[in-house]
Image 1 (cartoon, rainbow, N blue to C red):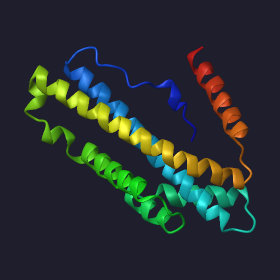
Image 2 (image 1 turned 30 degrees about the vertical axis):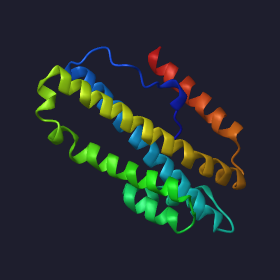
Image 3 (image 1 turned 90 degrees about the vertical axis):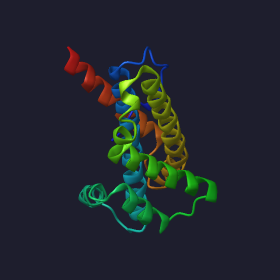
Image 4 (image 1 turned 30 degrees about the horizontal axis):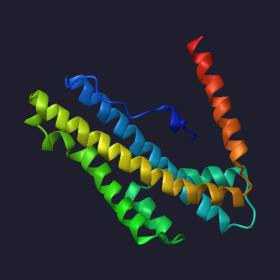
Length: 175
């Protein structure tokens, strides 16, 4: 999966109504899923490096296997192949906790705040902060992933070409 992440900004909220909270929650959740997909790409690349010859079926099989893993399982798998700095490791753990909190407890924690303007503003700021942290970790892991995929023969130009092809396909949906 390819995403045009640069295109989606973390804008300032326009207000403090419930729709704003849901919008920022959606953006944060989207970025968590993009990061998780990036982990899949990294895990597949790391496994592919260990193989002597690869077919498309091999890649599809690896992607299928990695997509069955949870975020935490992917991180454990990746750690077996790559050493990251202690700082990045801390950020990855924090993002995993953020993702789990977002999915399993964010609205429960903010049940009272959700009923007030000031509380919703607080929620939006927290979601914006989590989104920024997720994006920072995603960027750091992307640097590792891109150099790995280049070693496998996939160039940045190939990714850009695929992204351009996907944009054309998306535009056709709108016409």
